[in-house]
Length: 180
Image (cartoon, rainbow, N blue to C red; front, side, top):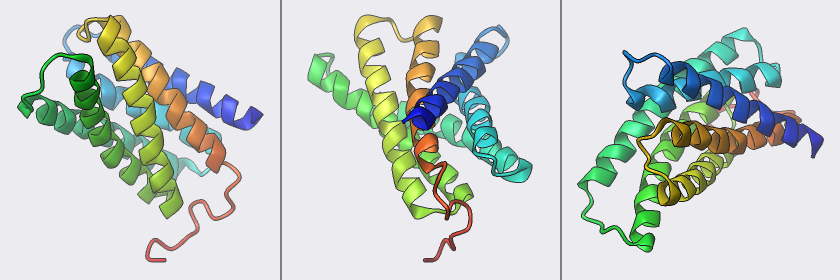
């Protein structure tokens, strides 16, 4: 349990630092926050897993790209829906957005770790973390503000970090053949 808490804290710190770095540069669009948060957060977790520099850099690259494109896909899907603004429709809208990030990011990161169980765990963790974060923040804050974006990355990063902590002692991590 201590290991999972440590990884959850590392994930929250890494994802929020990535979000803050991009948010502090005024020339960069805030649309890039999830990508930067994913790259920095996943780098932090990859280093903590002790999987080697190559895999860590690959995780960071794929993490950044996956979180960026997941955010882009989720935003397009949400913008194309004709949902209203009541609470149930808001939850559905944020779940669609979170699910887009979860499927793309969870699959990309799981493939680097070469472990099917990792893919499913990461998809679930990203979905739960970002759904909870978006529902809480979307309900109480205007989502274009900076602070909610950073808090969202803390919640999502903690969720992803907890799964990395859970996988830490998986003896097959990175050794399993993807076709099995």
